[in-house]
Image 1 (cartoon, rainbow, N blue to C red):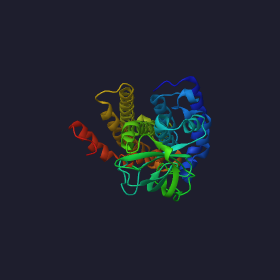
Image 2 (image 1 turned 90 degrees about the vertical axis):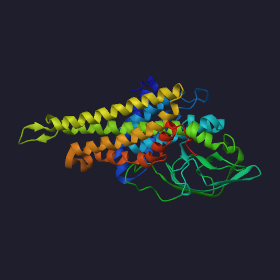
Image 3 (image 1 turned 90 degrees about the horizontal axis):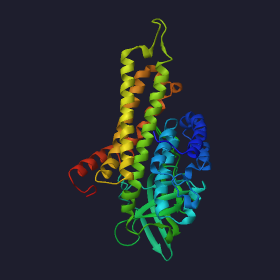
Length: 375
C-alpha cells in the first residue's frame, strides 16, 4: 500500500466518512453520489494530479491509484467517477489551457472521458464522430454511447475524427455547450451511481483552440496518455472492490455460525481455505499494480505489456474474489446488509468496459508476438 503524504491522507480519511455513509443509498437508488463528489472536489483531491505551479497537489499516479483503491473499498460508483476524472485530467494537464487546469486544481470542475461511441462501440480508439471547422470554431456531431458522470461532469475530454486530414482529435468540451445533450439516467446492474449515459452532439460549437494536442494526433494521446492512466486506475478500483469484499466476508464468518454446533463459520477449514484464496488473489493483483506503477515511473520494454495486463488481470480476478465472497457468505450474501452482493455486481463492469478483457487478451497476445496492436 502506498504511503500517502499527510495532507492527502487526512483529506482522504475525511472523504471516506462520507463515501462509506452514502454508498448503500447510492447503489440502492442508482443516484449520483453528489455529496461524496462535492467533498472530493472540496478536499483538494480533485486536483491531486494537477501540478503544484497551478495550486494543485502535484501528486503522482501512484498516489492517485491509492486514492481510487481506498474509495472502491466502500463505493465502486464513486471510485469509477474518480477514475474517469483523473484519466481526463491527465490529458488536460498535458494539453489544456491554464484556465481549465486551474479550475480542476482548485476543485471547481469535475472532468470525464467521452470516447466510446455507438458507431465503434468498445473500440474507443476509433471514433466515427465528426469535427467541422468554421472559422475560429468547430462544430461537433457525435453519438457517444457511454460517458461516466454524463449529467454532472463539467468538462468532457472528447474524441472525434480529425477536423482536417486523417486521424483522430481530442477536444475539451463544456458539458453545458449548446447542442450537447445527455440521455436518460443510468440504471445498471452495478456501479449504479456512476451516471454513465449516452451523450449526443448536434452542431455543438466550441472554440477551435479547445483542441487538446494536435489535430489528427488524438490516437497518440488516447494510447500514450489516457490508456496507461485509465487501465491502472480501473485496476486499482477492482483491487479496492476485492479488498472490500474480503473485509466484509471476514466480518461475516467471524461473527456468524451454527448455534447448534457452537461453532463460528470461521471454524470450518473449507471456509478458511476460501478466505485464503480470496486474499491470495487480491494480493497478487496488488503486486501487479505495484509492478505496473514502477513500469510507468521508469518506462522500459515491458511498460506497455503491464499497462495491458493490469486491467485484464484485475477485472478478471475481481469477479473470482467476489464470486468466492458470495459462496462463503451463502444465502445471507443475497441480503444487502452483509455487503458483498454490491461488490459482486460492481466487479462485473470492468470486463465489459473498454478496452474489454477479451480485447486486452488479444492486445497482450499481439504484443507478445511483436504485432501492431491496432492493425
